[in-house]
Image 1 (spheres, one colour):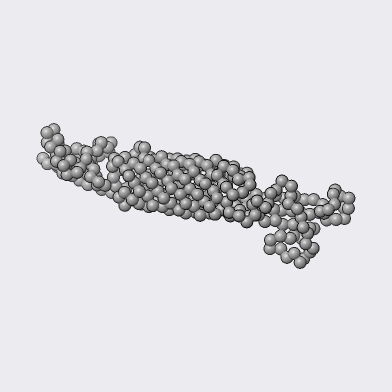
Image 2 (cartoon, one colour):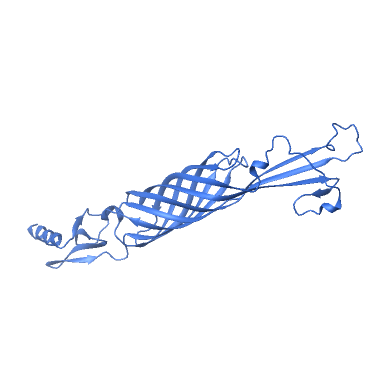
Length: 278
């Protein structure tokens, strides 16, 4: 015992710190030591002791004290949500079917919301082994919101891409209940925020991981925009270089009831960023 204490004292003077003995350790191991990012087993060999480096894995965050991560990232929000409004009625200017010989009009409008660039930051803290709790905030400022319409008279349609010379130009009012102008040709800003759990599948300097969480998304820049609940699930990869590294994520943000379509919509976030551990 006195020999072990003396070795421990000598290693401490060299900057090595004794860590808690993990459940899995090689035979003859007398302790696991940490110095910076290096870890080594103190192993009995015959009548002497020596340090054997831990091969094939970096220092575990919970052991090394690097429990925290901050990531600054950028990427893309891939979204394709839409709403379609269709109506049918008599020739404008007349009510009912007073003149049944006049053709009926079919009016169709579609409002769509596309993808955007994405920027944000994330904080993670390891709470047990490879399991971390995360929280993030991101902004997607360039979601394109556009509305297109089409008018059909006896099978002849007029609208984007149609040749209006095939028939008379007919001016129509906006269908009741559908506000087109506030949505025409503008950008919306989406604020994404939330949190969840991340689990590193392996240790080491290259770490694939999975994520699951929840949060919200708030849209600004259009009438009727709202805050929607979001479920998150996806995967990614970390590449570590000591206390710094890179992180890539592909996460599906499932908006359970999107303000535009009224249905569930998949908003895929593909991001890459720079991380710092401390």
